[in-house]
Amino acid sequence: MNKIIAANWKMNGNISLLDSFMDSIHNENFILAVPSVYIAYAGEKRKKFILAAQDCSVFEGYGAHTGEISAEMIKEAGAEYVILGHSERRATSNFDNVNSVYKKLNNAINAGLKVILCVDEDFESLLDQKTKELIKGNLNKIVVAYEPMSAIGTGKLPSATDIETAVLDIKNKCYNVKTLYGGSVNAENIRKILGINVVDGVLIGGSSLRLDEIKKFLTN
Ligand code: PEP
Image 1 (spheres, protein in one colour):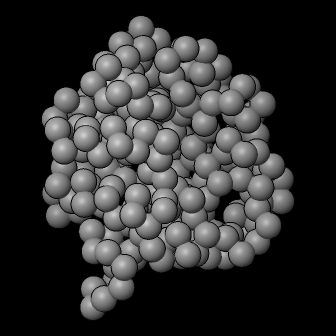
Image 2 (cartoon, rainbow, N blue to C red):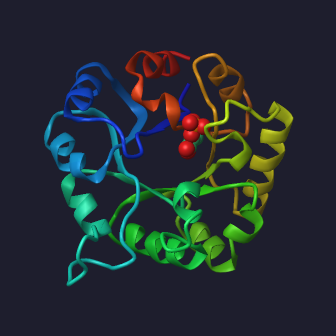
């Protein structure tokens, strides 16, 4: 199965866990989003999966922006993807909103990164007209992740029909963009989710630190 399995460590993990992932995961459909300080380390090693960052700056390139990390730097460090607009960042408007995510999307694409663009139940308004236009022109570089708030970290998986309906809705509105599902995915339910035809893969949070679990995901 060629569906995408993306895992987001959030502010977790360490070098030794990263080493175990790099030693034992050989899968070109697996994307691992690590804290940005680990990207260069993994980028230099011969890893056999795809590296991602969890965010990038609204500022482009280089400049006097203390603490910021640009899309260009992420690319140079060895990541191929960046996650943008995760609900944990949108929840605090100081971190992200529709406009900052749009700016970051542009920066990421211009820097040569691919993007996993997260939206929740409110995808109607998060995928505004300008964002849709950008998606339209970059269908091979942007993947949407539909992550209902009600499912993130709660263990409450929506029904297969609800997932299918939402993903189809996103695809209909956004030029058939590839769309992942995220929220309480685990080794028991992943087969069911990947079995939904319109779902192009999954984005995993909580289970992403468990190498044994990830290996099970990858054999599904
Ligand atoms: C997430 O936070 O993006 C997520 C999918 O979390 P979990 O898998 O823990 O529900």
